[in-house]
Length: 247
Length: 250
Image 1 (spheres, each protein chain N blue to C red):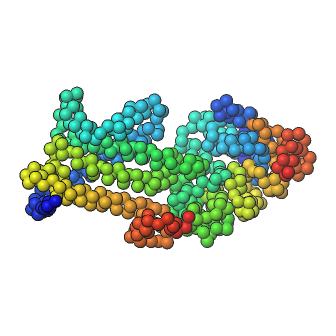
Image 2 (cartoon, chains in turn green, orange):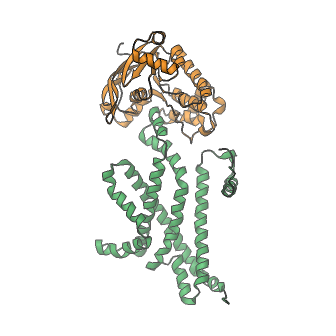
């Protein structure tokens, strides 16, 4: 094979990709923020009301977890105006679709996290005279938040990759910008490779941030290690079966 | 006993589905009295204690703490219920310390949240209570690094800090390693000697014999027999208590 890689084409058109990166970041951050609000709302309502009242929320969660993101995006952009007569601009309908998608996953993460808090810890607070709101703030949230962070990180990383589907509606995010360069220069391998690396960098930055949050919220900071020391330990223990620290 | 009893319970009934756990409990506890409740697992001891501070809500019957009716049977709102509960201390079999708070934090939190005591002062009171249970040196440790006995002593300190009018202990030593039981028993003996009103569900017969003012035997949801500790153990009247004591000391 005498295929010659032409990465110079990608570098020459890098400003196009930079624009795409900006749009992808904005889309992803909006999706994460709105998805978190939706997820919290759905989780709390589902935990508070009787099962019969929660049925619409259960249907929402199952529909958005159980159908392809691409169809959700297309459906909300094209079909919602037909059904409701409400025409939204592309970015609004995209953000709504993705936030609903991310919210459905996050609501289950939040629900599991809240339910995972030992009932005894809640009873102990109640027995001391805490009011329900105080129990939530002082006992449930600190424990649930810490335990939920890895799962939230997973959903956030997926959200970044989900945003690539917005290219089908002509949203000029990273994937779309890449496709423009491909269409002009017929170099899909080089462009997709670079685009993939850029997604990887964004996803890994998110993972790192979530790891930092996890470290920040951990109540026992083993031996007062800094984040980077703990981080090195995590990576090391991932590759060794020998237990690290005390068990 | 008169209406100024520390705890007064009248005709308390509680069922879980088909299973009737409490079948009409009447009892009265004077201020400063130490009561031990004995009974086999599933006899209703824990349910009785849980009803007193409304972690479990009874179907019928009344509970009074120093003459004030307690509980959701009166359809009280959450804030009132919380206030009532703060007058009743509760120590759980499983300790139930909050894992995200240090020993000191576990004790100080309720002071700050419920009693609105400023952080610094709450910390000082909390340290005093930890000292009382012999754990001042462990104040900065998290529950996961403490032994079961130490955790239960922190839980007792947490309850003490609130200065409850009545202290309930739900099998406080049942989840402990045998060699850790003694340290918790010692703390409870010291509390009893100080004149606190205590109701203790326990399987520790020796503790009941030498510390309780009165011992109550519950079986299948009713009080079968009760009496001053010495009589209770030396001349049990009912056959059920005799066979229970025999099994327990067997």
